[in-house]
Every structure is written in C-alpha cells, then in structure tokens.
Length: 468
Ligand code: BGP
Image (cartoon, rainbow, N blue to C red):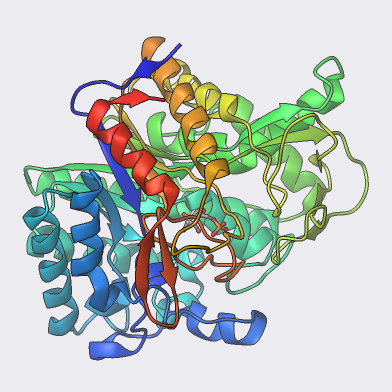
C-alpha cells in the first residue's frame, strides 16, 4: 500500500560544518581536535570536504530545484570563538548570516546545530565536556548565537551526545582516542546533557520566537535470543549506554532507577565513578518540558548476546564487511549472524528499528512534543557513471525508512519532517571520503555536484508526499 506523508512535512537534507565546509583555516577559524587527529590516525583530512564554505549558494540552489525545503547545518563553534571563548571572529559570524540568508532566499528552512562533534581545540585538550568549564563556555557560545542569529527559527544544541561519548571514550575512533573507559562515557553524556539543559533554559529565558531541541542517535538494541534472559539483559545494558541514559536526562530530568541500576552494574565491572550533583538535576528537571522537538538520527540496529570476557572493539573504518568487533565486559556483544542485511561497514539495516524507537519515545517520554528524523541514510561506495550514480539501494533504504515513519505517525507519533543524511556527499568522520551518502555526488577534486538517481526520486516524493 502506498503511503502519504502529512501536509507541511519537511523533506530535508542534512550536513555538518566540519564534514561539509572545508576551509579549515580560512577567515580566522580556530583549530579543533579533529584537525590533528585525522592527520595522525586516518588517511584523509577535512580539506577540502565539500567546500560548502564557498559552494553553499550552489547547494541551496540545488535544494530548491529538487524540492528540498529544509537543511540541517551546524555552526562551527571555532569560527565564532576561535579559542572556544573570549574573542569573537566577525568573519565567522558574517559567514553564517550569509548562509542563512541564502537558505531563506531558496525557501529552505535551516535547522541549526550548535555543536556537531567539533569542540574547539583549546577546550578539547582541557578535557572537552568532562571538564565542567566547557559547559560554561558552551552556554556562553549558545547565548551569543541566539542573540546574534535571530533569523534562525530552529535550534539544536547538540548532535548525538551518545556517539560522542562512544567515539571519544569507548571505541576511541574520535579524538582524544581513549578506549574502553565507561565512566568517562557516562560522565560525558551527563555533562553534555547539563550543557543542553542550560542552553535550553537560556533560550527560553531570552524569550526568542523560535524553537529549540536536541538531536539524539537512537539505534535500537534487540536480544539475539529473546527467550534468553541473559541476552535480554545485554540488550538492555547496551541500550542504557547509548540511548536510555540520555533520553532519561532529556525528558525525565533524572535517571530512572532501572537506568541507574544498569549504570552501577556496568561501572562495578569496568571501574570508575560518576560526578552527578544535585544542582545538575535541578537544571535537568527545569528544562525537561521545554524541549520543543526531538531530533532522531537513525541508521541501524544491533543484536546483543551475553558476553563474559574482556572488552574488545574493532572499528571497521574501510568498509571491509565482517571487520567489526564489539564486546563489552559486563554488558554483552554485538552479533551479526542474524537474518538482516548490512552495509559494508557492518551497519545492520533494519527500518523497523526506526518505528520502534519513535514509538518508544512516544510511550516512555510523553512530554516529547514532536519529532524530526534529523538523520537517516545509506553509506555506500557509490559508482559514478554517465555523470550520475544509479543508487537504487539508497532509494530503497529511504523508502523503507519513510514507510516506518509513516507507520509511526499513523500509530499516533508526532513526526514533522525527515532530513536525509546527507544532502550532498561529505566525508565520514571515521571512514573517509569513500563512504558516500549524498543525494548529490561530489567530485572532491573539482567540487562539481551531480544529482544521483535518488535526488530525482526525492524530488518526486517532496512534490507528491507519496512514498513510492
Ligand atoms: C552520524 C553523524 C553524522 C554522520 C553520520 C554517518 O553519527 O551525526 O555526522 O557522519 O552519522 O556516519 P558515518 O559518517 O560514520 O558513516
């Protein structure tokens, strides 16, 4: 049965400053930890990326031509405050005014994220969000942006607090590259959630006209054998690490007993303790009903089995299928021999998981107000022929996930829009330029853009609202 998405639905494309802009040292931009981390650990850097810093007028023209009426962009904190605080860089401020003006000129609503993985270097090396001073600096930066960029109607504080903790302190694939430190994972989650809550409170106290929310990645976690209580527990604990702890902080303003019981178990096995203060919970509670929307990023799900051994994680950076290992002491291990398709980076493609996660938010956190799917898409080694890419697998992926969204709307969830990751090809943080997601193919040498087959499909979708 063909399904129709509601009137007013946003058909968006998503980007992030560091992955799209390039111009890493241009016009006074300050350094971020990624600059050196990529040079030292990977085979690529953030130059040229998609040169969005200069190419944005073309990208927004393409949006308009292809029926894309929303764009996720992020502000690079270190373009505004090169050191993270103190001196403001007027050229950075001017760039984002130009960018937003171009969005409106093309009738593309910008959804603006304040932090998409790119903490300024000086703050990162002082402990990033593990250092509570970074919370203060983030709130100052947020307040500056709210006041300066009054043309913005939709603000997001953070992109993916969960994967930040995971990438920085569990897998070590993000700077500073620390591995297997579960206490740091939870502390980072917690401190970033406090920073989020403080920014939301500042926005509401400022009486601005727009809306504010947060973007969480919500991969579903299923037991490998649902009849085995140990597998069920592994899925629950994994869910607490990546989803539940953060959702509780967002919408309950505290961690439920169930969540804290899991956290205590994980830390009792892995060591470490948390600094959770009464005033943090006052802040979280004050903000919990003020989120105007939740952004859900969803790509995949995981199947978990009980595991008794030592922690071992191998990140499959190059897309060599079968290369992933993920086993956490006292938690569980991810298993791949389930009857579910997966991409070359071992991401399990499971549209039903998106439905399950939307409905879970709606049931467990009824104060959520509304949802946007702020990222979803298929990473692939696209083949460029005849000046295009015949990306039928991507179309199929989007179709299936939009069907899941439509089902969730039908079953009572309030979902207002969908942003495909990514608008045009960008580089992937830990997988390089070979993992492409865009509706528009980017030749990274010439910076020319070429619509893929999916771009035409998406245009028809946005015109009709019908998922075919
Ligand atoms: C999300 C990030 C994006 C983007 C996407 C795809 O976690 O918010 O910035 O990178 O995932 O992930 P990857 O680039 O690892 O394939």
